[in-house]
Length: 339
Image 1 (cartoon, rainbow, N blue to C red):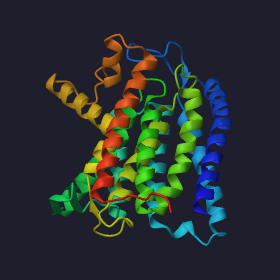
Image 2 (tube, rainbow, N blue to C red):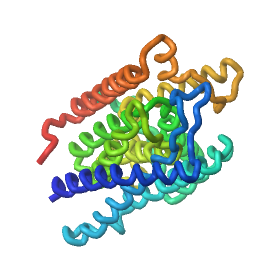
Image 3 (cartoon, helix red, strand yellow):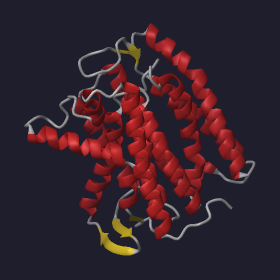
Image 4 (tube, rainbow, N blue to C red):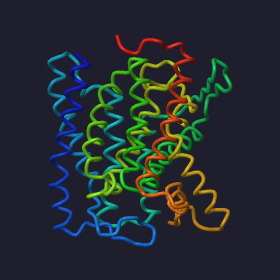
């Protein structure tokens, strides 16, 4: 039954996004919601910057269909706390990004909004309260986090991952492709640990991204904008919690969080963000000061073409994910992924 649901949700979200993007593009052109070329950007003509709206609407409509169908296979989704966490986090970040696309919010206001959102989610119960790192079955750390430190780590983790996807969204198809590779890894881990929420949601997001990539891969016809990068970034932040707890079940109270696997699954965007922040600080610039220090800018600078730079970063991201998944599989002796 779940295989049919996964396939149905993937196909529906894919075709919905395909049909929605031309409508969103026309709306953006009519209302002048455009991302204009400048010295930092690679596109040569103004492009609509709210393609993420098609991604989110495609996701939402598909999820509504699943809510209806859930009553037929005795799985009431409305009472699922993990799904409610996901919807709250992703909707909040999506709206912050959408407001930024329409109103050009200042980086400080955007950051404050993100911190407030994560603090509210933490208050509701989604917290990193225990940190557990196990590599090759060796326990390097199993530490109960004090309350205030829990708030700090949880906020930094969600905000950091979300913004890392936003920051790497600098070339056609780059951010969406990196998210796709990461989601693919989370999905296979979720199969192995039988996490039903991940298995329900990931195919939907996967379909919306593939539908969007048809219009976003080089040369791009539309950009995802901050609404898209914030939605996809917060989606990855949530999935980094869900399937990688030590009990492999649900986000209950005092679940133990393992940093090791998501750090590698999100290797490229996280490394890029850390490098950019520290290099800006060393040069006595604001960490939020826009420049051309990102990995994609450096690849272009040495003469690599736009398309090849994207494919190179895809390859690096794939290697990170493959390494993380291989270690996860060997560590927990997982041999059979599909029942």
